[in-house]
Image (cartoon, rainbow over all chains, first blue to last red; front, side, top):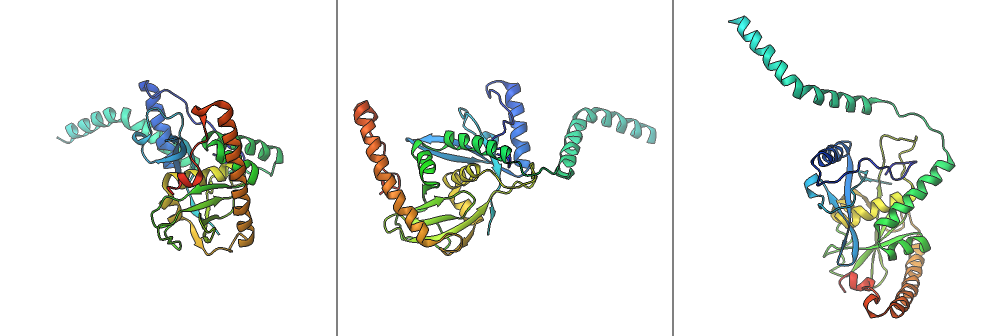
Length: 76
Length: 217
């Protein structure tokens, strides 16, 4: 998510392919190092929710996407 | 002796350089990127509208059909709280079900599901410090999605990050009460239409769980 832009695709790939996975891990780490939060939308028991992830290993292997968004801060 | 040491050091450096150079380059690239001043972009209504359209599509693809319809029709999304004793700071509920109303770029409001008593307001923002288009503000629907993801994914962390205020700080309590009334009316209509669709489609696709079921009541 980006101000003035909305959704931006950062990287795409198949985690079953080693080269793709390596690239996805690198991008994942880069985004978190930039201070973003990561979440995976999930569907559990008919309910949609999100799973916050801090490590690439926490991302479900069958996840379709990981969404990065700015870290929350206290507002006024 | 010294010559041997220097030679050994040079060999070690040459061997390590292959491994180290890309890392140093990467670190330097990131360092430069962070220090680069944000380009200044003026306000462009077309760009903001396109951003909001993309954000709405993303929100729709993430939240459920009901939440999307709720946001589309009412302008906010309700999320059920999952903490046993309420939202924590300033909101002990004694085990009663509670929910949050998520508005774009406004404080999240916590309330008791049964009585509609407002518990507190949680002011939270998701500022993008890089200000890619001269603003740190996400499109409305992205702000709602960020709150939805953070609340459903890690309610405790979001609530502890937010600044908590008594009801009435940002939202007019009377207006929020009216929103809760609108929500209850909307839910009745939604359940009727879902049941109607279920009857038309057959028993296998009947209405899903009710909001109170979802809250564990």
